[in-house]
Image 1 (cartoon, rainbow, N blue to C red):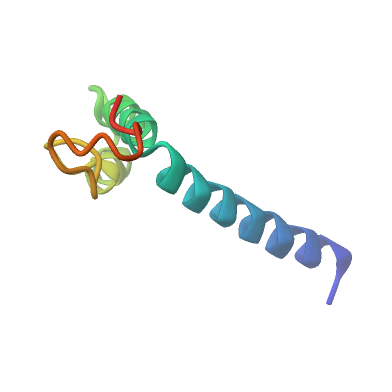
Image 2 (image 1 turned 90 degrees about the vertical axis):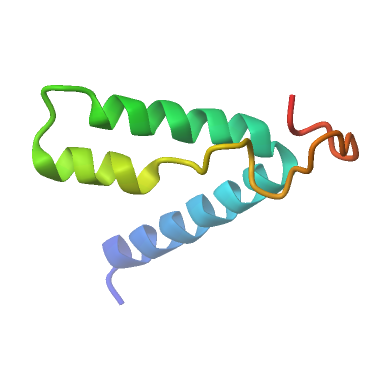
Length: 78
């Protein structure tokens, strides 16, 4: 395997792992970042491909997934 391809694969794995850890540690913050990115991609005048990507990245309404109302067990909803 070429060194460039190896570097790409390792970088992708590390980014995926970091995103997974962030979602577990700070789900509220990740939800905010995802919402901001989605809004920025959908802003007019956006090409159709960029608006579609923004709609796919839009987080679910109602807060971070996995956070119950008043759970206060992880403090990640703040």
